[in-house]
Length: 467
Image (cartoon, rainbow, N blue to C red):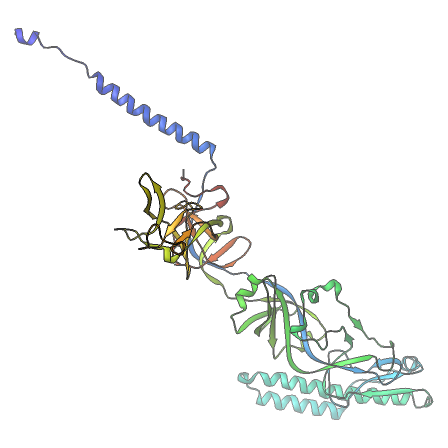
């Protein structure tokens, strides 16, 4: 009993003090982190995924055709007997030149004749339609276009014959009036305007050619006065034509390697495939020709044709434009780079001064890109003015075995934040629009699908921690 009275109980004071101290340290750490994060802009992450960009660009293209100008052999007032954009057969009446200016008055005063088809003409037309209907095959739909052209031409010939008959009757009593009837010298689509583009090729065009405010077009109308040797009409005798667009180098990159591209005509909302030819390709602009063998007639009256290129979607890693940054790197010749000691990392031999004189130190480097002759090395690995020695070369060797660090190159990339801090990864851009960029997947020292990157590169520096 006496022994029990001598036992002294101690309170666990040290354990309580230790717990309070640990709690205080944790609390202080949290406060410091909150303070730092309040002073710095928050780095928002973005997960990289495989995606596409589908952006069809619109252009105001210049239409080039095989246009043949016809000059007037007479002076006087012109009157056309065919509608603009219609096909005229060889020797069809196209226009007349009235040297006195009276024919319009005579036509206006003459009684209106019946313009309906005769029984014989109607019978012939019906027979042609019935024959075509019986032989039509959906697999040869082009025959429908040929039949349509043939029918239009037949009706045009009938109309021309009547016009000639009417004018002949009207002018029968005016034989002294100088009226010259002019016929088509070749078959083709007839047009009554000229603008100086008739003989141009795609290679003749410049960026100024696409400026509509500088474009001058002259339309010749009925009763206009023309001089001998001046333009009176032109014709296009085939369906081969082209549309020429002015594009940025980035836009041209999407189509320059394509043989054909689908083109949507905004005027008719129809599409056709154009053969792609890059006519001019500079650092500032590209001129691209799209060649066609159909649809010319629908746009024969237009020099400028609004189109949309239906380019296939680009596929790759999709990132927001705000995440893209540029960073400088040292350019180090490959012959000065070696494997680092027992490590598989790359390193260089740097010449340094010590108490015992000059020595060579093995320095590991961070490489972000490899070209044929150089590595792009992180500027944190080395400093400007560092002297590098070739492997196996003596420290005090000649300058041919030395490389002075200084030359730099710039890489485009993003900040990878997978590890909790910002690490620059280079990218190779395939295509961009106003919001997103598609980049090449699986490049060396680059991004991978499902990596996390900084959404806004402008607020990030290399090695910044992500809070």
